[in-house]
Length: 111
Image (cartoon, rainbow, N blue to C red):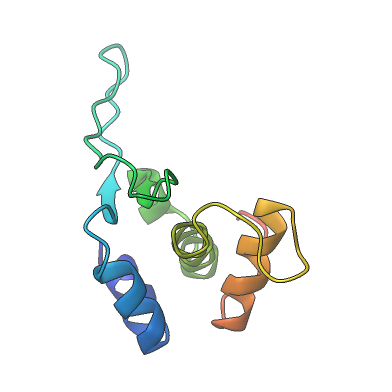
């Protein structure tokens, strides 16, 4: 998915280094088939015990570019934050939204 590459390459270098330097980080597309379920292979959590696996749904390709890029950035923010807070923001979802916004991907409604 070209949008994953677009978002990832737009992130600050320290984020690239953090994520790519962790062997437990991965990005995968969910391969759900109606009636058959899904199979997504992800790496085991790192030494922190937090997941750094990002699993995206292929249907994002059918959404607007701004929404898709926001979702990708939001999920990468979760991976970077080890699914935790950011600064004074303790809510994981709010933290991921806030960090993604600093990267230029503010929350947008699904279109």
